[in-house]
Length: 215
Image 1 (cartoon, rainbow, N blue to C red):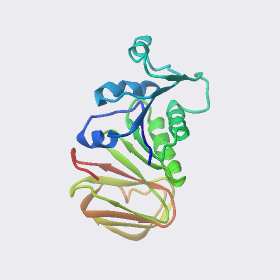
Image 2 (cartoon, rainbow, N blue to C red):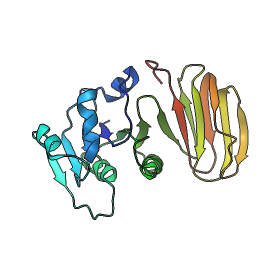
Image 3 (cartoon, rainbow, N blue to C red):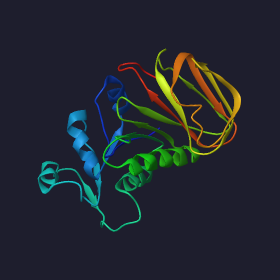
Image 4 (tube, rainbow, N blue to C red):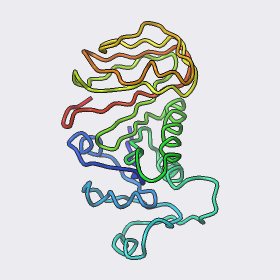
């Protein structure tokens, strides 16, 4: 399995969990996501984007990193271009680092949507800021997580959901229907071995793990 980490322009906090996600992964930076490379102790093999969010001084500091430059007027975000570059290099698993926060809420939404689409294509994809993690929940599957008891989590619905079950939580659910826009699946808490399953729909587990704990 070839794992890639994509450095995006959102928020990042270095934690032992994030270091574990990065260990052994190949790294590609998307435009301003390069600012996370030095604090995370990684050197990307490629830097892609239109470079409208970085200074010439920053470009010079990373002069040894190969760059792919695109025009500002394009149909894809810099993050999407970085993901495509990773897939072209044989990525079978992706960690989107810096997928949350930042100045653009629309980009964070796109990152979650793209992660779900990639997971449906068979590319294992997760999102992380170091203190917040997202995992696509695929219809017709069952997923297990080793988050510590007390970990806060939500299930974000990107459509109406049917057959959603949540076990190992303070507020479990058993084969329920969730209307699109419902807040029923927000702000839950891990109480044991967390297990989620879904019959139909698109959703994402969003968790706030305790630093240093593995999942």
